[in-house]
Image 1 (cartoon, one colour):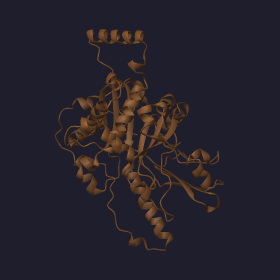
Image 2 (cartoon, rainbow, N blue to C red):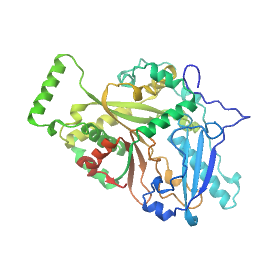
Image 3 (cartoon, one colour):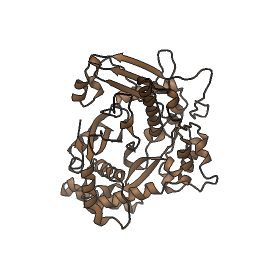
Image 4 (cartoon, helix red, strand yellow):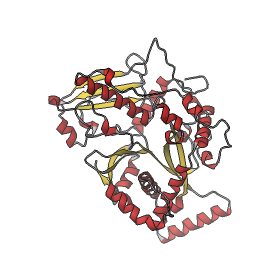
Length: 424
């Protein structure tokens, strides 16, 4: 941690930060873990797993990579927990590491020669990002302004904490504000039905991705969790309309909903893809919508409108926008903390990251493809992680880690449950 509060990873070739690797033999059989839906709570209470927050080990050292392998009863299988600091890699970098590690293990198990593994170009040079961005930046636009949050003493203080102390603080807060975990399966059949429902309201030649559909559902359901005008009694509706009219007369801005999406730089900066850059190469995008619009009756027209807006906003993320975000992060060390600590312009937000295209079920250590890949429970305070479904299924798994009240709403929402099947 530098004096300004920026995080800096220094590499000392004489004192490398090697991974923390542990193995445990436990008395839980693979079949029992499978019956429990691969919930890590099915492991013994004392089972140690690699967590989502960087914490110092028994020697007071923070390891950037933590691996814990649980060898299951009767050699029935293994459960691998892996954690790598997000400051070092993103989902694509994490996947690259796991695939390379598994390839080496599989080869060694078959007495193969390591020299036979094809060489792979991998880079963690943060300078690669700057090299592929325009040297001249345009002035920040309205999309970037939505990401700006006024800072304060608290965010600056936490930004300047030592990584050890900040890890302890975040870990304690995670236990205090524990989220609920739910896994949903969204099938290819459902996605096709959704497209056919909104097709007549989509502009000609407009492309709508699977991610756009899932983000549309997440956004509308989250917005409606605050309540809808239709759910109010007649008196409540009149009061709401009166408040809205007074707000407009006073120049009060309307309430906004923010769909926050993690967008990869790689498809937009070809040089990063060519160099095999494995560092953190994602930028946040905030898609703003009127909260009141998302709370209107759900119609194909509304679903199409939200999906098209999300698609257009994502398509508009270019090298110039990425450069502006990089500049903002470099100039404001407590930038990433501010939305968690202070009020934003959004009344409510939905955050999601899509890791479905990174080949998680291709990670084979020699015993075949994994049967289940997911985040550890409680990895986020409020987020949805979109992952591929196991190979036997055609579609996506959406791992919801949200406050318990919102989790209950999703489980009851007709819009959500008619499109997503609760797995556990």
